[in-house]
Image 1 (cartoon, rainbow, N blue to C red):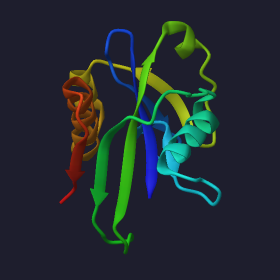
Image 2: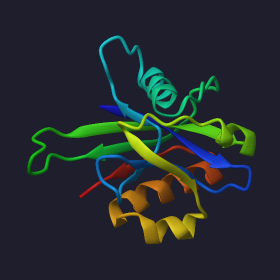
Image 3: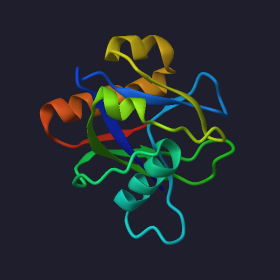
Image 4: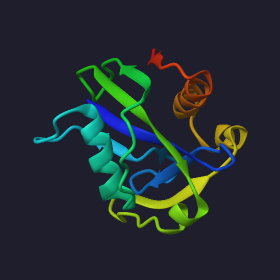
Length: 144
């Protein structure tokens, strides 16, 4: 199980982190549940703090439940929960401190630009999150 936070900037453009383990992989602050995490939201908040230095203290507003079926090299299904991280101001963005072992860069881009920078699978997720926040209703995404 994983959990993450979805942030945008003040203009509504999505924020993502470049993975240190795949230069073409952009992700949201988050990760797998670890021993001691009491809820998926606690996982998202902890991972966000570890990966960016952002101390998120907002409400646990669910935007997306994400189901990933088993696939080669990954024998078990995986479920993810992505929560609304809200809006990051330019001052908050300037204070981001990345964990270099996990991420090499961060970026804020218009949704359409992310389509050219992400795999179709990852873009489907960011698009679902963007629409869920606009519609103020959580979405369910199941990968084929």
